[in-house]
Length: 292
Ligand SMILES: C[S@@+](CC[C@H](N)C(=O)[O-])C[C@H]1O[C@@H](n2cnc3c(N)ncnc32)[C@H](O)[C@@H]1O
Picture: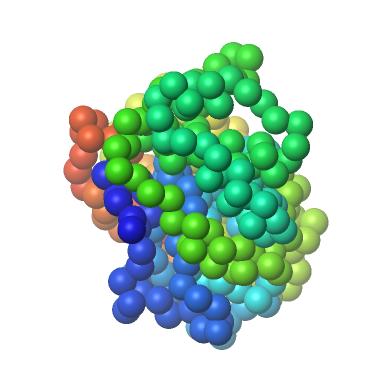
């Protein structure tokens, strides 16, 4: 049983029509984590932006919840993210799924237990991965937020009746078998990119949607300077002869920074940032690519 009571931030089982995978021998799977900025909404229309002649290796240097990776399930992929706890969790899912599940089953979705586990840091990497996944599903809104000391400080989510889908976790484990993982800054991923590869870039958005302001918290996380650094990386990707697809905020500044003469699409979607009581509505995003 699977209960999604989190305003779309949590990934739900797929509708069969969306299950077109490049490698159908694998079972359908969907993200094991709730992740802000998740790209589940893009999957039904993703084909439009994929290179028509296919691609060699796949790269996702801002992997987050991995919605696109798990949708495409390419034969060989490289993923990374600045969040080392996240990458440790994916490594445990890939390499030790059964041990991970047994640790996960020990953690109960009860307020007292949540705060107890939130305080602990395990030396064992698999146990720490289980803690990361548990805190993500049992927390309020599944956001990843740490205090100045780097301690996870999201409150308990009171997600009564939530049952974790272990079968999906096992399917994700299989889907990750040929996926190379590392944690770190996105520029490090350049080292593995070769001609004919596809790079899906989904950075945190720096600017608010459709206005000129900066989001306070995002300013700290991903600055305009980092957007410029990303644009320079795109120049290198193109020099290598690889294809990129990048999603970003629909904002004039973004258009200016990523002025590579490639295709730009504007897509609208309902926002799911901020949970039940947050402002929700239609927002625009840009999709840039040199592939179509
Ligand atoms: C918008 S989210 C990606 C969401 C993902 N596409 C999904 O479907 O869930 C952006 C990700 O970039 C990561 N990130 C932030 N700054 C980064 C950096 N400098 N290098 C690599 N990853 C970074 C964050 O940890 C976050 O997971």
